[in-house]
Amino acid sequence: MAWIYLLIAGLLEIAWAIGLKVSHGFTRPLSATVTILLMLASFWFLSKAVQMIPIGTAYAVWTGIGAAGTAIAGMILFQEPTTWIRLVCIVLIVAGIVGLKISV
Image 1 (tube, one colour):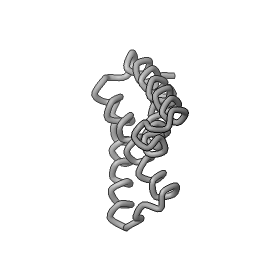
Image 2 (cartoon, rainbow, N blue to C red):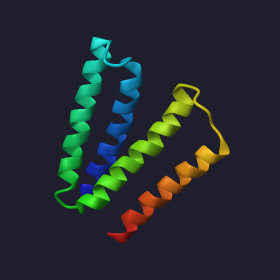
Image 3 (spheres, helix red, strand yellow):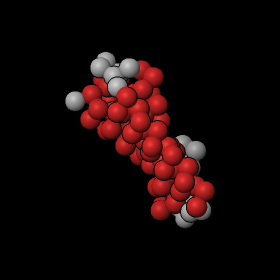
Image 4 (spheres, helix red, strand yellow):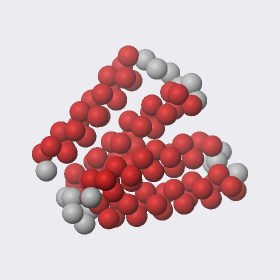
């Protein structure tokens, strides 16, 4: 169950990172409020995960999911550059996440 909590926390991190962009520096009250709620939910799920997963592993996986997912979301939602080097780096992040998962 801890890994499911961690996955949810990572997905919520992607959502709140996108919320930072959409809220325009917290100048839009509704999207800013949703972003803050997503942050709190992400931290809550992370806190549940670290009760059973080592903190170093959990934090690295959480940030990895967030980094890779947010980069992909930025490419899709905001037409950010999709270069081969960015895609290779995302694959490396995912490889690191998988490596951490199988090493625990």
